[in-house]
Length: 348
Image 1: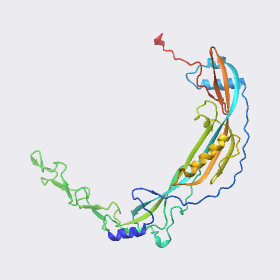
Image 2: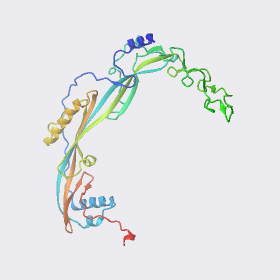
Image 3: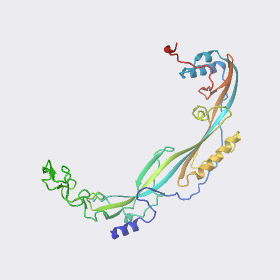
Image 4: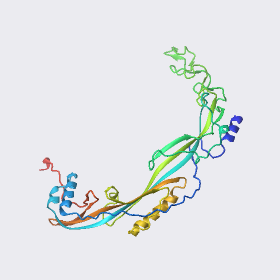
Protein backbone atom coordinates (compact mmCIF):
# COMPACT_ATOMS: atom_id res chain seq x y z
CA UNK A 1 0.00 0.00 0.00
CA UNK A 2 2.89 2.36 0.78
CA UNK A 3 4.28 1.78 -2.71
CA UNK A 4 0.93 2.68 -4.27
CA UNK A 5 0.54 5.83 -2.18
CA UNK A 6 4.05 6.98 -3.03
CA UNK A 7 3.41 6.40 -6.73
CA UNK A 8 0.22 8.45 -6.66
CA UNK A 9 1.80 11.16 -4.56
CA UNK A 10 4.61 11.57 -7.07
CA UNK A 11 2.29 11.40 -10.06
CA UNK A 12 -0.51 13.77 -8.96
CA UNK A 13 1.05 16.52 -6.85
CA UNK A 14 0.38 19.61 -8.93
CA UNK A 15 -3.13 20.48 -7.69
CA UNK A 16 -4.92 19.93 -4.42
CA UNK A 17 -7.61 17.72 -5.89
CA UNK A 18 -10.71 16.55 -4.12
CA UNK A 19 -11.26 12.88 -5.07
CA UNK A 20 -15.00 13.22 -4.45
CA UNK A 21 -15.51 16.20 -6.75
CA UNK A 22 -13.97 18.68 -9.16
CA UNK A 23 -11.51 21.37 -8.13
CA UNK A 24 -11.83 24.63 -10.06
CA UNK A 25 -8.58 25.95 -11.49
CA UNK A 26 -8.50 29.77 -11.91
CA UNK A 27 -7.55 30.96 -15.41
CA UNK A 28 -4.13 32.53 -16.03
CA UNK A 29 -4.01 36.28 -15.61
CA UNK A 30 -3.81 37.51 -19.16
CA UNK A 31 -4.80 41.03 -20.06
CA UNK A 32 -6.73 41.22 -23.30
CA UNK A 33 -5.96 44.10 -25.57
CA UNK A 34 -9.13 45.95 -26.35
CA UNK A 35 -9.46 46.99 -29.94
CA UNK A 36 -11.11 50.31 -30.63
CA UNK A 37 -14.66 49.72 -31.82
CA UNK A 38 -16.55 52.22 -33.93
CA UNK A 39 -19.90 53.22 -32.54
CA UNK A 40 -22.27 53.51 -35.47
CA UNK A 41 -25.92 53.49 -34.47
CA UNK A 42 -28.70 52.63 -36.88
CA UNK A 43 -31.70 54.90 -37.10
CA UNK A 44 -35.09 53.90 -35.72
CA UNK A 45 -38.42 54.61 -37.37
CA UNK A 46 -40.82 56.76 -35.38
CA UNK A 47 -44.34 56.28 -36.70
CA UNK A 48 -47.37 57.71 -34.92
CA UNK A 49 -50.22 55.22 -35.10
CA UNK A 50 -53.57 56.22 -36.54
CA UNK A 51 -56.86 55.71 -34.69
CA UNK A 52 -57.71 52.79 -37.01
CA UNK A 53 -54.42 51.03 -36.25
CA UNK A 54 -54.84 51.55 -32.50
CA UNK A 55 -58.40 50.25 -32.48
CA UNK A 56 -57.44 47.21 -34.57
CA UNK A 57 -54.61 46.38 -32.15
CA UNK A 58 -56.95 46.84 -29.18
CA UNK A 59 -59.68 44.60 -30.64
CA UNK A 60 -57.10 41.91 -31.42
CA UNK A 61 -55.87 42.12 -27.82
CA UNK A 62 -59.42 41.79 -26.45
CA UNK A 63 -60.06 38.66 -28.54
CA UNK A 64 -57.18 36.90 -26.78
CA UNK A 65 -58.48 37.84 -23.31
CA UNK A 66 -61.20 35.55 -21.98
CA UNK A 67 -62.76 38.01 -19.53
CA UNK A 68 -62.61 41.21 -21.59
CA UNK A 69 -65.69 42.54 -23.35
CA UNK A 70 -65.12 43.93 -26.90
CA UNK A 71 -67.91 46.52 -26.40
CA UNK A 72 -65.65 49.05 -24.70
CA UNK A 73 -62.90 48.60 -27.31
CA UNK A 74 -65.36 49.25 -30.15
CA UNK A 75 -67.14 52.27 -28.65
CA UNK A 76 -64.50 54.13 -26.63
CA UNK A 77 -63.37 57.54 -27.87
CA UNK A 78 -59.63 57.98 -28.49
CA UNK A 79 -58.82 61.49 -27.30
CA UNK A 80 -55.08 61.68 -27.89
CA UNK A 81 -51.87 59.84 -28.79
CA UNK A 82 -48.30 60.58 -27.71
CA UNK A 83 -45.19 58.62 -28.57
CA UNK A 84 -41.93 57.84 -26.81
CA UNK A 85 -39.11 55.34 -27.32
CA UNK A 86 -37.92 52.68 -24.92
CA UNK A 87 -34.34 51.37 -25.15
CA UNK A 88 -33.38 47.82 -24.31
CA UNK A 89 -29.69 47.13 -23.71
CA UNK A 90 -28.39 43.59 -23.23
CA UNK A 91 -24.85 42.45 -22.45
CA UNK A 92 -23.93 38.77 -22.88
CA UNK A 93 -20.68 37.37 -21.49
CA UNK A 94 -19.73 33.85 -22.58
CA UNK A 95 -17.52 32.41 -19.85
CA UNK A 96 -15.39 29.29 -19.55
CA UNK A 97 -14.71 27.49 -16.25
CA UNK A 98 -12.22 24.62 -15.95
CA UNK A 99 -11.99 22.08 -13.13
CA UNK A 100 -10.14 18.80 -12.70
CA UNK A 101 -10.74 15.66 -10.69
CA UNK A 102 -8.85 12.46 -9.89
CA UNK A 103 -10.49 9.46 -11.55
CA UNK A 104 -9.64 5.79 -11.83
CA UNK A 105 -10.68 2.82 -13.93
CA UNK A 106 -9.86 -0.91 -13.88
CA UNK A 107 -6.72 -1.72 -15.86
CA UNK A 108 -7.37 -3.03 -19.33
CA UNK A 109 -4.43 -4.67 -21.07
CA UNK A 110 -5.84 -3.70 -24.46
CA UNK A 111 -5.73 0.02 -23.60
CA UNK A 112 -2.41 1.82 -23.94
CA UNK A 113 -1.31 3.71 -20.80
CA UNK A 114 -0.69 7.39 -21.57
CA UNK A 115 1.65 8.25 -18.71
CA UNK A 116 4.23 11.00 -18.07
CA UNK A 117 6.81 9.01 -20.06
CA UNK A 118 4.97 9.79 -23.31
CA UNK A 119 4.95 13.53 -22.80
CA UNK A 120 4.75 16.43 -20.39
CA UNK A 121 1.44 16.95 -18.64
CA UNK A 122 -0.45 20.02 -19.81
CA UNK A 123 -1.98 22.43 -17.33
CA UNK A 124 -5.82 22.54 -17.41
CA UNK A 125 -5.88 25.80 -19.36
CA UNK A 126 -3.40 24.50 -21.95
CA UNK A 127 -5.58 21.56 -22.99
CA UNK A 128 -7.22 22.45 -26.34
CA UNK A 129 -10.99 22.47 -25.76
CA UNK A 130 -13.47 24.54 -27.76
CA UNK A 131 -17.23 25.14 -27.39
CA UNK A 132 -19.50 23.49 -29.93
CA UNK A 133 -21.60 26.68 -30.16
CA UNK A 134 -20.97 30.19 -28.90
CA UNK A 135 -23.30 31.74 -26.31
CA UNK A 136 -24.86 28.35 -25.56
CA UNK A 137 -24.60 26.63 -22.15
CA UNK A 138 -22.69 23.35 -22.38
CA UNK A 139 -20.34 21.06 -20.44
CA UNK A 140 -17.50 18.97 -21.86
CA UNK A 141 -15.36 16.29 -20.21
CA UNK A 142 -11.86 15.32 -21.34
CA UNK A 143 -9.10 13.06 -20.11
CA UNK A 144 -5.95 15.11 -19.61
CA UNK A 145 -3.12 13.59 -21.71
CA UNK A 146 -0.06 12.03 -20.03
CA UNK A 147 -1.65 11.72 -16.57
CA UNK A 148 -2.24 7.95 -16.50
CA UNK A 149 -0.66 6.15 -13.55
CA UNK A 150 -0.90 2.35 -13.27
CA UNK A 151 -0.90 0.99 -9.70
CA UNK A 152 -2.01 -2.04 -7.78
CA UNK A 153 -5.60 -1.96 -6.58
CA UNK A 154 -5.65 -0.41 -3.09
CA UNK A 155 -8.69 -2.51 -2.13
CA UNK A 156 -7.51 -6.05 -2.95
CA UNK A 157 -3.72 -5.50 -3.22
CA UNK A 158 -3.72 -7.28 -6.61
CA UNK A 159 -5.46 -10.34 -5.20
CA UNK A 160 -8.47 -9.62 -7.46
CA UNK A 161 -10.82 -10.78 -4.71
CA UNK A 162 -12.31 -9.14 -1.64
CA UNK A 163 -13.89 -10.71 1.49
CA UNK A 164 -17.64 -11.14 1.19
CA UNK A 165 -19.38 -8.52 3.32
CA UNK A 166 -22.60 -10.52 3.59
CA UNK A 167 -21.14 -13.63 5.24
CA UNK A 168 -18.01 -11.90 6.58
CA UNK A 169 -15.83 -14.32 4.60
CA UNK A 170 -17.33 -17.34 6.43
CA UNK A 171 -19.15 -18.66 3.31
CA UNK A 172 -22.34 -19.18 5.37
CA UNK A 173 -25.25 -16.99 6.54
CA UNK A 174 -28.13 -17.39 8.95
CA UNK A 175 -30.96 -19.46 7.54
CA UNK A 176 -33.68 -17.14 6.18
CA UNK A 177 -36.43 -19.74 6.71
CA UNK A 178 -36.01 -20.45 10.42
CA UNK A 179 -34.11 -17.22 11.15
CA UNK A 180 -31.27 -19.21 12.69
CA UNK A 181 -33.32 -21.27 15.13
CA UNK A 182 -32.90 -24.55 13.28
CA UNK A 183 -36.55 -25.47 13.91
CA UNK A 184 -39.69 -25.14 11.81
CA UNK A 185 -43.04 -26.32 13.27
CA UNK A 186 -41.15 -28.14 16.09
CA UNK A 187 -39.15 -30.05 13.52
CA UNK A 188 -35.76 -29.52 12.00
CA UNK A 189 -35.82 -26.72 9.42
CA UNK A 190 -36.11 -28.13 5.92
CA UNK A 191 -33.79 -25.46 4.50
CA UNK A 192 -30.81 -25.79 6.85
CA UNK A 193 -31.61 -29.28 8.23
CA UNK A 194 -31.32 -27.93 11.74
CA UNK A 195 -27.80 -26.51 11.25
CA UNK A 196 -29.10 -22.91 11.46
CA UNK A 197 -26.73 -21.81 8.65
CA UNK A 198 -26.94 -22.07 4.88
CA UNK A 199 -24.49 -21.39 2.07
CA UNK A 200 -24.03 -17.70 1.20
CA UNK A 201 -25.65 -17.03 -2.16
CA UNK A 202 -23.75 -13.75 -2.68
CA UNK A 203 -20.31 -15.35 -2.85
CA UNK A 204 -21.58 -18.83 -3.78
CA UNK A 205 -20.12 -20.20 -0.51
CA UNK A 206 -16.61 -19.05 -1.46
CA UNK A 207 -16.30 -16.40 1.24
CA UNK A 208 -14.97 -13.92 -1.28
CA UNK A 209 -16.26 -11.88 -4.20
CA UNK A 210 -14.77 -10.10 -7.17
CA UNK A 211 -13.16 -6.78 -6.16
CA UNK A 212 -15.56 -3.97 -7.01
CA UNK A 213 -12.81 -1.39 -7.48
CA UNK A 214 -10.66 -3.18 -10.07
CA UNK A 215 -13.37 -5.62 -11.29
CA UNK A 216 -11.01 -8.53 -10.76
CA UNK A 217 -8.12 -6.99 -12.74
CA UNK A 218 -5.86 -6.50 -9.74
CA UNK A 219 -4.68 -3.11 -11.02
CA UNK A 220 -6.27 0.31 -11.57
CA UNK A 221 -5.29 3.24 -13.74
CA UNK A 222 -5.52 6.71 -12.18
CA UNK A 223 -5.86 9.78 -14.38
CA UNK A 224 -7.00 13.40 -14.28
CA UNK A 225 -10.27 14.38 -15.89
CA UNK A 226 -10.94 17.91 -17.10
CA UNK A 227 -14.42 19.41 -16.83
CA UNK A 228 -15.03 22.48 -19.00
CA UNK A 229 -18.23 24.44 -18.44
CA UNK A 230 -19.36 27.13 -20.87
CA UNK A 231 -22.06 29.50 -19.65
CA UNK A 232 -23.97 32.42 -21.14
CA UNK A 233 -24.28 35.20 -18.55
CA UNK A 234 -26.83 37.92 -19.31
CA UNK A 235 -27.17 41.43 -17.89
CA UNK A 236 -29.82 43.75 -19.32
CA UNK A 237 -31.47 47.12 -18.76
CA UNK A 238 -34.66 48.81 -19.94
CA UNK A 239 -34.75 52.60 -20.22
CA UNK A 240 -38.23 54.09 -20.56
CA UNK A 241 -40.67 56.48 -18.90
CA UNK A 242 -43.91 54.65 -19.71
CA UNK A 243 -45.56 52.67 -16.90
CA UNK A 244 -45.28 49.33 -18.69
CA UNK A 245 -43.93 46.33 -16.75
CA UNK A 246 -40.25 46.14 -17.62
CA UNK A 247 -40.33 42.39 -18.18
CA UNK A 248 -42.64 42.88 -21.20
CA UNK A 249 -40.39 45.25 -23.15
CA UNK A 250 -37.56 42.81 -24.11
CA UNK A 251 -40.06 40.55 -25.89
CA UNK A 252 -41.47 43.35 -28.04
CA UNK A 253 -40.05 43.63 -31.58
CA UNK A 254 -38.21 46.82 -32.44
CA UNK A 255 -35.21 48.20 -34.30
CA UNK A 256 -31.67 47.04 -33.50
CA UNK A 257 -29.59 50.21 -33.18
CA UNK A 258 -26.28 48.61 -32.25
CA UNK A 259 -24.90 45.06 -32.28
CA UNK A 260 -21.26 44.21 -31.55
CA UNK A 261 -19.44 40.96 -30.75
CA UNK A 262 -15.79 40.63 -29.69
CA UNK A 263 -13.52 38.89 -27.19
CA UNK A 264 -13.96 41.95 -24.99
CA UNK A 265 -16.42 44.65 -26.03
CA UNK A 266 -16.19 48.31 -25.09
CA UNK A 267 -18.88 50.29 -23.31
CA UNK A 268 -21.09 52.68 -25.26
CA UNK A 269 -20.03 56.31 -24.97
CA UNK A 270 -21.60 58.29 -27.81
CA UNK A 271 -25.26 57.24 -27.72
CA UNK A 272 -27.53 60.33 -27.46
CA UNK A 273 -29.27 58.96 -24.34
CA UNK A 274 -26.61 59.42 -21.65
CA UNK A 275 -28.32 57.04 -19.21
CA UNK A 276 -27.77 54.16 -21.66
CA UNK A 277 -24.05 54.97 -21.87
CA UNK A 278 -23.73 54.94 -18.07
CA UNK A 279 -25.52 51.61 -17.75
CA UNK A 280 -23.32 50.08 -20.45
CA UNK A 281 -20.20 51.16 -18.56
CA UNK A 282 -21.53 49.83 -15.23
CA UNK A 283 -22.53 46.44 -16.63
CA UNK A 284 -19.17 45.93 -18.33
CA UNK A 285 -17.35 46.96 -15.15
CA UNK A 286 -19.43 44.43 -13.22
CA UNK A 287 -18.75 41.68 -15.80
CA UNK A 288 -14.98 42.16 -15.51
CA UNK A 289 -14.99 41.01 -11.85
CA UNK A 290 -18.20 38.97 -11.53
CA UNK A 291 -16.67 35.56 -12.36
CA UNK A 292 -13.12 35.41 -10.92
CA UNK A 293 -12.80 31.64 -11.52
CA UNK A 294 -13.86 31.95 -15.17
CA UNK A 295 -12.41 33.33 -18.34
CA UNK A 296 -14.55 35.49 -20.60
CA UNK A 297 -13.93 34.16 -24.10
CA UNK A 298 -16.46 36.32 -25.95
CA UNK A 299 -18.88 39.17 -25.31
CA UNK A 300 -21.81 40.61 -27.19
CA UNK A 301 -23.97 43.67 -26.53
CA UNK A 302 -27.08 44.80 -28.34
CA UNK A 303 -29.10 48.00 -28.14
CA UNK A 304 -32.69 47.93 -29.36
CA UNK A 305 -35.34 50.62 -29.61
CA UNK A 306 -39.03 49.88 -29.01
CA UNK A 307 -41.67 52.47 -30.02
CA UNK A 308 -44.38 53.15 -27.44
CA UNK A 309 -47.68 54.94 -28.14
CA UNK A 310 -49.57 56.22 -25.10
CA UNK A 311 -53.25 56.46 -25.99
CA UNK A 312 -55.78 58.54 -24.05
CA UNK A 313 -59.39 57.33 -24.13
CA UNK A 314 -62.86 58.07 -22.81
CA UNK A 315 -65.70 55.58 -22.42
CA UNK A 316 -68.94 56.51 -20.66
CA UNK A 317 -67.84 58.17 -17.42
CA UNK A 318 -64.38 56.56 -17.47
CA UNK A 319 -61.22 58.10 -18.83
CA UNK A 320 -57.65 56.87 -18.76
CA UNK A 321 -54.82 55.61 -20.94
CA UNK A 322 -53.26 52.45 -22.34
CA UNK A 323 -50.17 51.62 -24.36
CA UNK A 324 -49.54 50.20 -27.81
CA UNK A 325 -45.87 49.24 -28.06
CA UNK A 326 -43.44 47.44 -30.35
CA UNK A 327 -43.41 47.27 -34.11
CA UNK A 328 -46.08 44.53 -33.96
CA UNK A 329 -48.45 46.76 -31.93
CA UNK A 330 -48.61 44.87 -28.64
CA UNK A 331 -51.13 46.26 -26.14
CA UNK A 332 -50.77 46.85 -22.42
CA UNK A 333 -54.06 47.90 -20.82
CA UNK A 334 -53.87 47.72 -17.02
CA UNK A 335 -57.37 49.07 -16.23
CA UNK A 336 -59.62 47.88 -19.01
CA UNK A 337 -63.05 49.45 -18.28
CA UNK A 338 -65.34 46.49 -19.03
CA UNK A 339 -64.97 42.83 -18.10
CA UNK A 340 -67.16 39.83 -18.86
CA UNK A 341 -68.96 38.16 -15.97
CA UNK A 342 -69.97 34.58 -16.36
CA UNK A 343 -73.68 34.22 -15.53
CA UNK A 344 -74.66 31.20 -13.54
CA UNK A 345 -78.25 30.07 -14.34
CA UNK A 346 -78.72 28.87 -10.77
CA UNK A 347 -78.21 32.42 -9.46
CA UNK A 348 -81.21 33.90 -11.29
